[in-house]
Each structure stands twice: as C-alpha cells, then as structure tokens.
Length: 193
Image 1 (cartoon, rainbow, N blue to C red):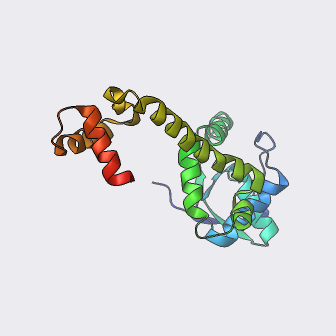
Image 2 (tube, helix red, strand yellow):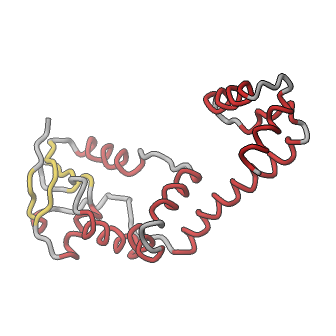
Image 3 (cartoon, one colour):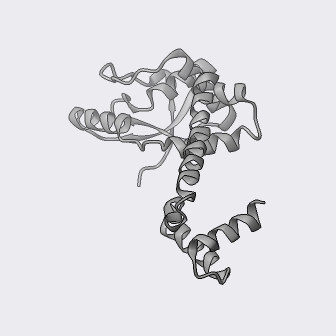
C-alpha cells in the first residue's frame, strides 16, 4: 500500500496533456472547500514529479499560499499515466437529481443558499432549479395519487419499492376491512383528516 507523503508544490510539474479544465468559479469553490474542510483527497504524482491527478487541487493550494500538498508517488510509464489521468477524470458516479435535491434541502436547513452556492461553485439559480425538481416530483406523485384514488383497487401504484408495498399491505390488513379500497379510505381518513 502506498504511503502518503508531502510534496513541495514548487517542485511539481504540471501535465501539459491534462484535458481537465476548471472555471474560475469552480476553482474558487475548490479553494472555499479546502479552506472550510481541509484537503480530503491526496494528489497522485509520478516518479518524475509530474502531477497525474490533482492538478486543480495543486492550483488551489498555490492560490491559498500553501507550499506543500499531501499525495502519493507512483512509478508509472507515460502510457499508464495517461490511462490514470483519463480514469480519474472520467470514472465518477452520476447524481440522482432527486437524491441530490433532498441532500441539498437538508444542507440548506443549516446554512444559507449563498454560502452553499459558493462552496460548490454553482449559481444560486442552478441550485434553486434543482430544488424545484423536488417540488415537481411531489406534484407528480400527488397527481398520480389523485388519478388513481378513484380506482382504489390499484392503490399500490404509490409504492415504488417492495418494502413500501409490504408496509401498505400490513396497514390495510390491520383495518380488518376485506375490501382494499375501503381499507385504504379508512387509513386515509384516520391519518390525513
């Protein structure tokens, strides 16, 4: 296993083949993130001192005025360095827009939209549009619910996962009503009115 070591930033070489670019706003967000959270991810440097991964973190550290940065040194060929660079820049998870919006909603309960906007380098408008997806999702569910409520025999449409279906079935069974439509209405009256 590689050990993390400290590199003198002035001795690191930028990789001129690095295709990954970062806007000034995103760089400022990275700087804010480092100032707020510290450096959470080491860079990767090859045996010649060329940065393999972490170009933007190095740039942010320079702007902050730091002289050292933590990282790993690996012994690789130029071909391997190119492959690592591509993988590190491209192999990432994709965000579920709904889960992203839910997480941001929780974050915004404890900090301002402006502070969060500066932290992630996105405009407040972009964040608000994402948050609007939560509202649209809720509205879509409500319209579907109302449309299907008239056909209560197919009430399970609201359950998106087996666990939710089981919970609903158990609740319906506890009413003692054999007709699922009537049982569903009993539950709605008890908890929604």
